[in-house]
Structure formats: C-alpha cells, structure tokens
Length: 225
Image (cartoon, one colour):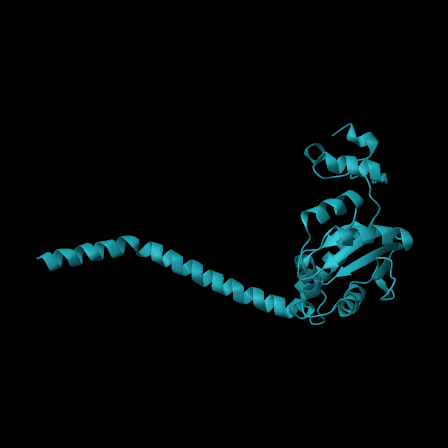
C-alpha cells in the first residue's frame, strides 16, 4: 500500500511538472536551431573570413563591397592615408571610409581620424566600418560629428546583400543598404521642407531628442514641433 501510494504520488508529481520540462526542452532546441542558423548566416556572409584578415586585406574587401553597392571607390595608399582608407562617390557625394578590422571595440581615435580625413579629402561625409563594435565614447563622438558608423551587424547585412547569387530578397537588401547609405550621405536637411541645415542646427535637434524625436528640423519648423 505504501509503495502504491508513493507511486501514485510520483505520477501526480510528474504530471504536474512535465509542462515545465517540455518548455525547457523546447527552449533548448530553439536555441540550438538559432545557433545553427546564425552560424550558417555568418559563414555565408564571409564575416568569419574577415575576422582572420589583416587590415590591408580588409580594405580591399570593402573596396569590392562598395563597388557592388554602386559606388565609385578609390583606395588610398596604405601608408600616410591621413585617416581615410577608401573614398567613395555617388551622385556627386563623396565619403571617406575608415576601415577597422578589430578584435576588440573600436574607440574614439578611429572617429577622430575619420573627421580629420573628411576635411583633407574634401568629402561630404565620413564613415567608419568595422567587423567589431564601438565604445560608447566613440558612438557619442560620432553622433556629435556626423560620422556614420557601421558595426559588425551592419557589415554582415551588407555582405549578405551583395552576394553574387543573391535571390530577390537579398537583391532588395542590396537596394536597401545602398539607399540607406545614400540617405546618410545626403546633406542634413529639414524633414518638413527639405532645406539644408547647418551642423549647429542639426546638433541642437539631436541634443533635444525628447522634443524632436531624433529628427532634424530647420529653424523655422522647429517652432511648430
């Protein structure tokens, strides 16, 4: 009788907790599937190969990538490049690109070099591209100076989009990536009237995100927000 009661109690306990075990098993399987998918995605993008490259090879890789995105690309000399590894041009807008193939996070120095190179090469915009991430200080400095930052995820997206065997969805992604870069390369304009604004006006809008929602308005339309 005691054994029977024990068995019944154990059965009731198992019935009560089996949904929890099933949920745990489902989560484990889902994580495993996601990791497999992510690994295949990374392998397909070429980012794992980029992680093994030296800086010079990474620059050549980016040169090919931006050409696939429809940009004219000039690769600067490896020594004495004044902070610019590539100079891209499209629709009359020139952008200097600082390439950083890093294992750790990219710091403020890369942003400073990009800002300096923008003036030296007489470009409209400046950009830093890395296979890694950025420090908070670098992100803050980039925002203050209008420097475009591409981190690891941005690079993976562009690499996948530019694959020669791209399907319709990836072709759309190529266009989206190129359009996004064109938008970033366009002069800073008011979202209402399209009038170009000064860096000071732009920074004022960005500093008051709670009012302007991260958008840029000319002095006249700031009053209506």
